[in-house]
Image (cartoon, rainbow, N blue to C red; front, side, top):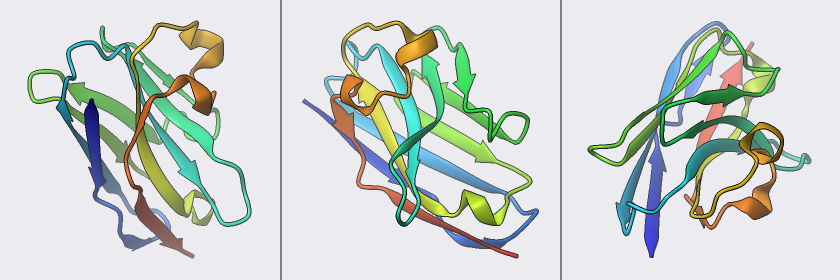
Length: 127
């Protein structure tokens, strides 16, 4: 079993930055892929950024050039550095982890591929 604890959400003004963290504990050695998702009020959960065990990142078009995903495998931590924040980035952000392989180029945004989820951390961006 794996537990994910995401944190770092806050309220900031547009143009500001935040860094989200996700601490993974439990049987983490077998995890294949980790990602950040977000859910805005009234919207479906969407993939923001993902990263494989080799450190290869993938980003949603809406955050490319502004967000950076990274991981610390030794400490089982996942991060999301968010810069140049916009009001449309307002959402609850979730850390997720998958224990089985998949075609990460096309499937990383599919929520059913992930077995473990954090409880979410709220990000609010004001204009």
